[in-house]
Length: 462
Ligand SMILES: *Cc1c(COP(=O)(O)O)cnc(C)c1O
Image (cartoon, rainbow, N blue to C red; front, side, top):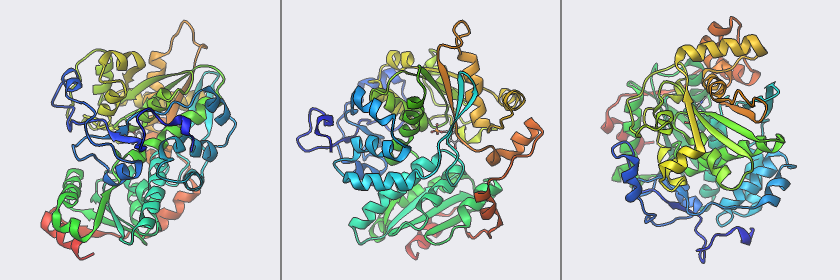
């Protein structure tokens, strides 16, 4: 514990609070919500925020005050390996809830795969975030969260049950992250026929404490069933239920770490250009910046769901209906984490717009970028990563091309979207060994309908 990092008001240290009180940013222009969002929800500890997922007032949890560890901290962690650095950064948020030795053990365990920076040219790097078990950056959040849950499960005798509705990547990451976690049971709900074959195998072949429910419906049905269960009193009484939703603070915090890791390896100024959908990945990066991480600038890249880039370029923020694209993990019309971005900049449009730039790529531009990157650098990239490359080329300062290094997080392995990547590059995508194994296994699911009563009865009897 580092006492100097504690913020002003901490007689009883409570580092996390629901800074946000509105449930829907889409209904109200941001200028008005700014008036109605005092930090009045009761502050809670980190672990309590993890357990609750969402604040009772419907807001998302954010740190009451952002720790600002100073220049010495930033230069000292540059020399450390990823898990060591991760433990020291996370300790700034978790030190009142968990001993440092536990945080170290969690970090070593959760971040046990490489996080390479790959140069495309002198001033463009891919930050490869897909070397975890399910081949997308969501492994960072899910693996960390699982280990935090495991610590919580140690404290009680009651088994924790985690419900997740998924449209693809999240289910696999959560299943893999929580696999064989003692005291924790995971129930995944996914739309039958609505996920890719690889995604389905990643969710349905593990067994043990992971149960996959194949819902005869669409993603929205899965979400509705989960919401019902999380608020149903009979179910609450019989089970300790929780959700591993992407808005959970435990999934957000570890996503700071790879930016810190990358920035420390690059001597000069860096621009991170982040492929974004629900904006958790980008919010985490800006959190690191606001902690004092030196010399970074930030760009949001989206697909045709470009409500945030439009806002950054001066339009009023208004959530829209989702448009399906080939970078489907970014198909979000009204990103939940937008309110976190607003909170981070004191609900000031001017501050947020001066900190963050934005751009977007449509499907054709995305496909062209996949092809061009392959022709120019011999590198296959996934469609999400391609939106980041496209926008980085759009926004780069042509008069001073070598002034900054651009880093684009490669959010998924190209094999997760092999049909698109193979079509654009004319080359097969190599399947990593660790995935071959899971593709050979038998899928094991329980089929359910979209009926709430039926799901409730199933839950109560399992
Ligand atoms: C989830 C996801 C994204 C979007 O990340 P957000 O944090 O929701 O902005 C981008 N790419 C891939 C591959 C993803 O799985």
